[in-house]
Structures are given as C-alpha cells and as structure tokens.
Length: 321
Image (cartoon, rainbow, N blue to C red; front, side):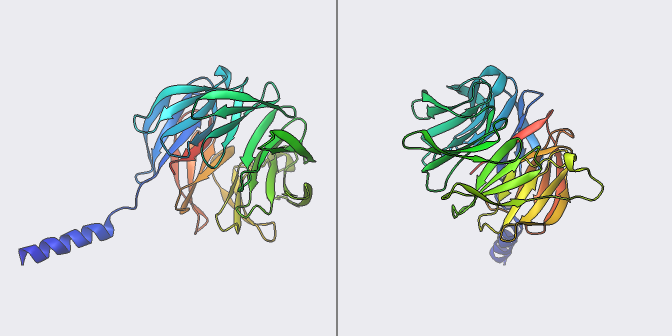
C-alpha cells in the first residue's frame, strides 16, 4: 500500500512539474549590463556587467556562449552560458550593432554602424576574416534559410543589401522606406520582411527578383503616424503570424502573413524594440527601452501575461536554444 502511495505521489508530481525553463539574456544599453531571466519563475536571476553600450545579443549555435555587441568598445563579448560571466571577445569594426551567424555557427557577420561595413569573423578561430563595404549606418542582419544570402539594412541609405555569402559581394540593393532597422526571412525563404522605423512600414521583398512586392502599414487610433515606428520582427515557424515591435507606439502588431494585414495590437511596455520566442514558441518576450522592462506574450492567446523589470534601456534579447 505504501509503495502504491509513493508511486501515485511520484506520478502526481511529474504531472504537475513545470515545463523546462528556458534562459533569456537581455542587453541593457544604458546600464551596460545583461539581465538573465528564468522563464519558469519569470524573474531576473543574475545581472552580468559587460562593456559599454550593449545592443545586439545572440546565443552561439551550440548554446555554449552568448555573444553581445558592445558598441562603444568596438567588440563582441562572449558570455559563458554555464558560468554566466564574460570570458572572451571577438574582433569587430567600429560600433557593432547587430549580427548574424551561419547555420553551422562557424561564421559571424557583424554590422558596424560607424564605418559602413560588415565584418566577417571566424567563430572557431575567433579571428577577423575581412570586411564587406555596405551602405551608410548598417544595422539589420539576417541570413537566408539556405545560407546563400546575407542581408544587411543600411539606415541612412535606406536599402536592403543582398550579399552572396560565397563571394562576399553585394549582388543587389533594394530601396525601402526611411531608416530600415531589421530584416527577417520567412522560414520557407519566399519573402524577406524589412522594417522601416521612420517610414512607418514593413517592406516585403521577393528575394529572387529583389523587388518590393508589398507593404505592411499600421494605424492606431489616437496615435500620430510619426509615433508608429516599426523595428523588431518575429515570425512564427509556420510563417502564418508575424509580430512587429512598434517602438514609441508601445505596441506589438500581430500580422496575418498571408494577407499582410494587422489583426491585433498588443499594448506592452514603453518603446518596444526587439523580441525573441522561447524555443517551444509558447511565449514571445519583448524589450521595452523606456520602461526598462520585458513583456511576456502568450503566443497562442496573443495576450501579454507578465512584465519583468530589467536594467536601463533594454535593447536586445536572446533565448537559449
């Protein structure tokens, strides 16, 4: 009877045990720190001191390190995911902002805002391989799902640059609306979405034809057009729904990818900037720069369920794979 009771108790404990907690890292641009968030308790478990002006942040493909671009130090710092401390740095150009890595996790491409280049880094050797000249104030970085095309957006030139990853040469320049900040491919490679902060739109580009084939526009009652400034983009794995951060509008736009229409606006913190899904895609976390917090969105319910206070001016976010 006792053994049966113990078995029943164990089964019950397993049934109500919390799901595997993911770990999120948030770069705080003004406080020069990275906040570590446990997604089980939704609390900050550690604050890591990093270099000056951390912005772009991402896990390495193997999950062993977190890379963070510290713009005013002109480098990419490496945080050991086990010890949660800075252990090394990578060479970049002046004022690195965002970066993208290839599928194998061997090559890193870094947008250097101050010298109009993309730096190519060998992650295994932690060595700089060269630079690619792009437009003025490069920022947004992404790689096509097949790994053949690197995209960089230049804020002042107002272009999305298509770069062949083999030759490391620009093969096309596509003009978009003012101040492009972020780029995201659909998972099936059929479209590239580019947010334009000042233009107030998201341009949809045909990657094969290098042409803008549509735009997502936004309208929020009571807000001036100038206050709606698209930046970060998150696309669900099935390519059906896109979430777009609208900066000082303090909202996330939920967009039906097929129709390219906004279906809902979610009120989050102030000056929402970037975002990241948990690997199971149950939650979407957004960084809110002015309110110094992170909003947690239930993806299925399309509802904000939690707010987590972090450091000053949270900018980027990455979640352990």
